[in-house]
Image 1 (tube, rainbow, N blue to C red):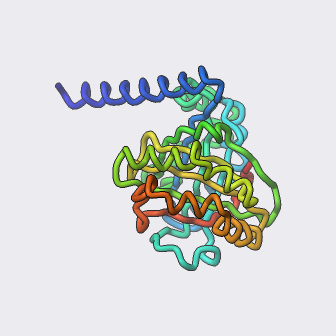
Image 2 (cartoon, rainbow, N blue to C red):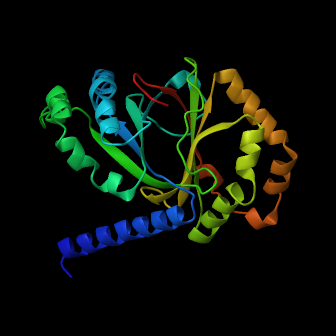
Length: 270
């Protein structure tokens, strides 16, 4: 098989898997979403700021017109992440795009290309030359929302709100499925809610780096609420029972956990 044929076949298989799983979710009445999480990298803070303004004034309204909402845009501040083990550039932006259907995902770029207002207003960014690109690169992960948390939520709009983004990597697919079970049927999501830990999304990664993994985001009114929530979570009797249950042993590679505290960027709808 030629390389191009192989890539085409692989892409078709991936989309088929996504469509099949989404269909099963709709049949069960769960109405689960596909969620794309992008991480944009920039050569400088000035480039980041220019793209942030483009997203706020041009891209987010166009995403909404294409049926993608709410759109989240977030950035990392060093003061919020003194203990992070990750080497993360300050000039990054995280963009969250929720899709209500596979059609919405597959045809997003076509709809954006046909949006004359978007193309005209964003021309300088959209057509930025190789010699002066708008961004260096972006990475993307495609998630399928948990059955017990099917929709992307907007828990609060506090001006001091803090978003916590976490990724749990598992050693194999069997352990990844067990970790997802722990969140849903096992009751970990209920512990989050009871502890005042308001979720934005919880999803399993279908496509992206460092598979298998799951990613979720929590929203807090401020830094104090974040600390209070995790304190209550750690003391919850059900969590203590879950965390000590041998059925969930080795479901997460502990050193590989991503844990970032983010702030909403200009124009973010989350």
